[in-house]
Length: 190
Ligand code: AMP
Image (cartoon, rainbow, N blue to C red; front, top):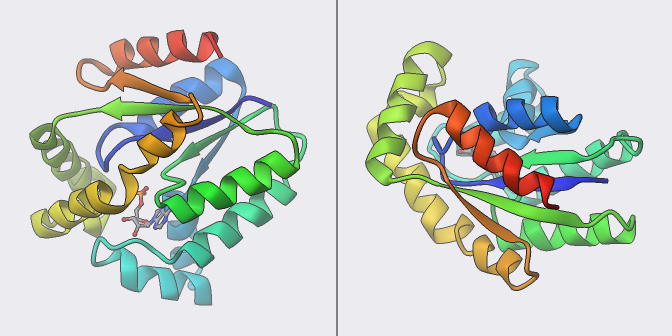
């Protein structure tokens, strides 16, 4: 199984690039943000709990997201591979993912880290907010908070995967097609 972690700060282009990779390599796309937004739309208890964090640009608890990933892995045992988008976001989540995948002998093959400058991130998110209707993309202070949370809690994961020799940093500036080509070149070597 080709399991990949597509990594980067909010606005790095993970969702857009995941679309290219799933098509080219026949992978399953797992975005914890999308899963959480579906729970909110369905007005489930989990969705209501998650919304309180998401509205502020804070992370939802590890317990909630790890539980979602666990049930998703259970129901997709035949997948050719999975692209994790927006997960893991904390060291505890990365450790839980390793345990789940290593127990099933299908470890993460690589972490693809999209590198994008901060001003570009804020610009992209505000533009996305105009069309997506996502409230967390429409308020500059929530966006700034999400980027700080990324630096504080999520970026240490680069060292986590580097220590396993699985970190691949990819330039995330340029056209969508240029970035996709860079990612595909890396994935082809895995
Ligand atoms: P995203 O769609 O990946 O930008 O995620 C939107 C929001 O969902 C984040 O700001 C978090 O509040 C929440 N979220 C998504 N994925 C995770 C995760 N792996 N851990 C904790 N919170 C998450």
